[in-house]
Image (tube, rainbow, N blue to C red; front, top):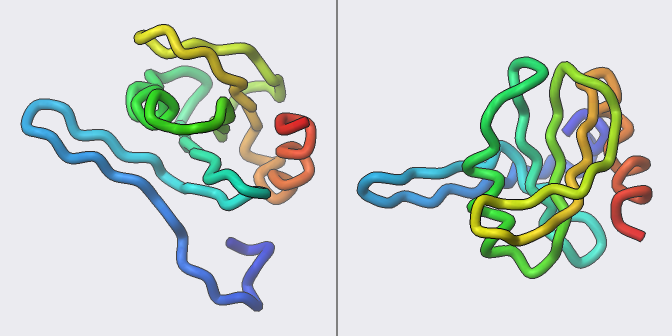
Length: 106
C-alpha cells in the first residue's frame, strides 16, 4: 500500500464463509493477470489453511507468505494435493514484493 499511495487504492482481500470452515486471505495483490494471495504470519511458522483453500480454487500456482523467516521460493502442496510456488518473504522485504514476484512468476 505504501508503494502506491498516489493511486489511493483499497486493499483487496478474500473471505470464504462456511458453517464450520471460514477462511480469509490478508491481501490479494494484483500482479500481471493474477490475483496473488498474500498471507501475513506473526512468526516463522504457522498453518496456511486459508492460503491452501485459496490456492485450490485459483487458476494459477502462486502464493506469498510474509513472515519472520528467511527469503526462499519453495514448491509447496495443499493438503488436497495441488502443487504451487510459495514465495516466503521476510517482513523487511515487503516493500520490494513486486521485485520478488518477478522471480516467482517466470
